[in-house]
Length: 298
Image (cartoon, rainbow, N blue to C red; front, side):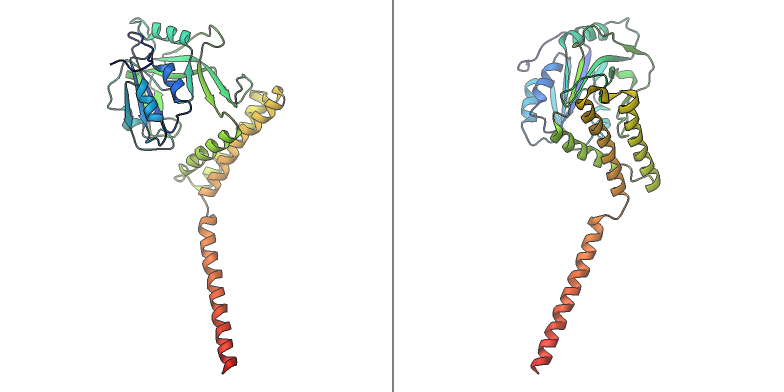
């Protein structure tokens, strides 16, 4: 049975794996962009909105998996699952230009194509801005991988990798013929996601000593400052550049604060003890006052 509104293209030799949670506002456009694949497998992390209902219109299969903040369950989801020769890992914020797909299929269906990873031209938006001076930018994205060299890990930020150095960098043909990534639609979205992600990242530093974890987090702040000032010269974008720079650095500042908070006794531990102590002192005061009143009456 052909799924509703699916764009059919024969023999792309590609399986798309997509993990989602509560993405009803943007999932449909993403799914339309990748419905050309031979298989479109959606892993729904127990969404509570209409994500699954929308996914079922386009996906080859929708699989319910336990909720996780990141993709640490990617091995369990994908390892034993058969797929096409090539696998692709977009996110709900991804879109892809049809002309780029035409070029991809030429490569993935060519038996003489002697590469294992395809670096796709990449167009990253942050706060609605796409510019090479933005700290949120990259030239290509290497997430189209031959299944035989795919390497999966539970390591944070390194869940998807590969064991081959045979990487083909697709040429840029037109500025808009890219794989898009649309992140941080506005400042509220940025802080909501950043708080969630940096808190999650900090929790995964618990195996490190406090000193080492804080040193790593502080070094990330310094690198972010270097990136916006010297690597990207983001400030040359005017007030947009100032805002992008501050937001980018803020991401790492927040991570440092969460790391610092994870490795100490914070208010969650101190305040209940303090409340109990003061409660006890007030109870003592009341008992003392009651005894004094009784004594005066007698």
